[in-house]
Image (cartoon, rainbow, N blue to C red; front, side, top):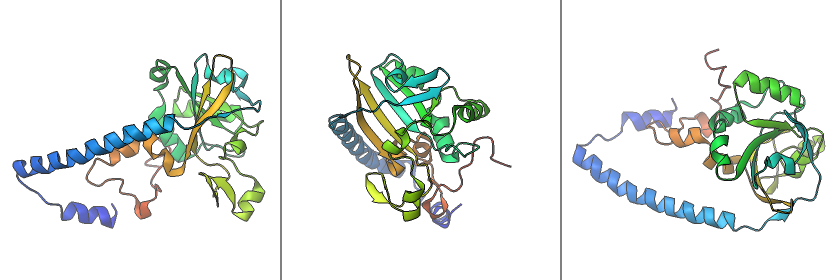
Length: 241
């Protein structure tokens, strides 16, 4: 437990039920305002301009070679999670694995709203399939290793970019850190088959899609992360080792 969490628990006020209820109702007003602001932000997000995808990307997955339009699987909207798993890695990123634990299983529900969700990584499909089996996941996961897809959507970086500590990530030139980074990208396909890139988010922009943090933010100790970094995260089958 961090010092900040320890102080919060040790010195926390304890009041009567009436005082508790009064404080909770006052806080509810702030929660409702945040909900209204989030609704407005989501509306503005959907009104952002789109860009046409002109490059022909071919991915490899459980259905063999597939183009980007084919990954929509008969639907008009596609959400891609950029999963950090490079060509030379033997296992997927622990943090991406935690996110995948959160979204695995929601595909059937998203399908009902004309949405397909998949994960994409640069590692060979054979590695993705083996790791997916290890973790017990069911979502579609394809390899972009033979394409520029990850580089074009700014989640993979060249050796030169990393050496210079200067690459375009999260909409700014900065040190990208590792050779692979996390993110989400959203696409739309119209009736004529044209694919549009509608939205992407990276780094803490992913927080709104991290189910575990929404729960942790409600408990007394909060995220309880040393130095405000998720260094505690392990793959699901590695805790306690």
